[in-house]
Length: 170
Image 1 (cartoon, helix red, strand yellow):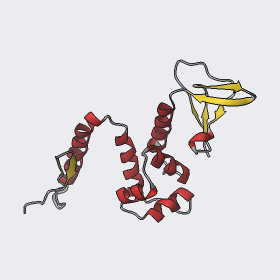
Image 2 (tube, rainbow, N blue to C red; image 1 turned 90 degrees about the vertical axis):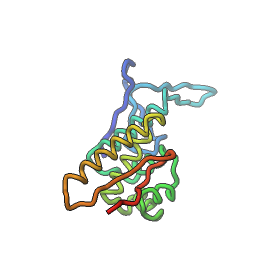
Image 3 (cartoon, rainbow, N blue to C red; image 1 turned 180 degrees about the vertical axis):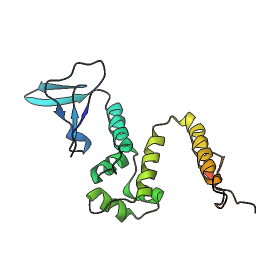
């Protein structure tokens, strides 16, 4: 397990990193961006910009070379606000497959990991920019498909706020 340290730029680093288990991951430590307070004899933790922290953790997970662990998959699914069934439907697998991945009983296949990474990255794109980003991705896929003349063209169209594959003319 690789320990991952997160910190906020421009803030002084804490002498003692905080093991941030509240995110559900075992290897996340905060170097700053948090305060601990004692109130009525109990210690309370406050984290600055928790949404930004979780986005940074998610980006770290999806941009790593290695496939996400079960706990990391569960973290990403939570950040996407999806149930296991929702994620299974999007990835064209069973909800039991997602459950086994998250429990570490099996590993997701490469296409499922790639799709999850893309879904997470697209979730970070502002809504008004998504059509432009999706258009660029589709154009890139079309160029890749056209490089091999023996391959059918992969064509998508955008209409009424969603993407679809139109019927291809011969």
